[in-house]
Length: 142
Image 1 (tube, rainbow, N blue to C red):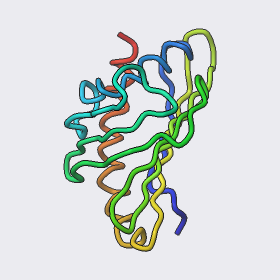
Image 2 (cartoon, one colour):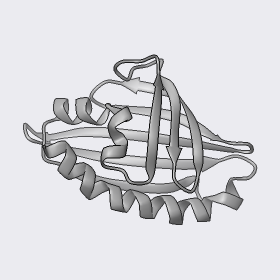
Image 3 (cartoon, one colour):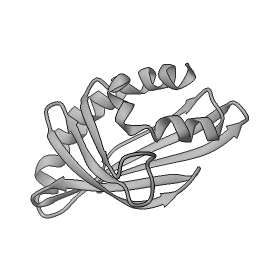
Image 4 (cartoon, one colour):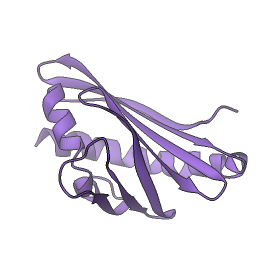
């Protein structure tokens, strides 16, 4: 079994600049993602290459993250996890037109205990993401 636990691809009805700007307002994610209770980002202000913080996720508790890749208008990746498990969240953006952007989310789970939590994580987090995506598409359109 590969390290990918959850992968989703979808389009949003705004241009690349708007999609990037709105989605990078991570402290607002609880507005469209019911599985996220809160997000804390440091340093305060716009998300950037040195951002870190934590997401408080229903059923999973707090997951701290540290930005590992920052390529504006292309993708960002951050890494978090639990003891014995490293979770990487990659957020990719691709312009389709002036008013359409393709997004890809890839979540990988690695580490000595990954085999133990990956199936439950895949099922539980995957369901949460499936609920959140249509809400994100609507939120980003407004």
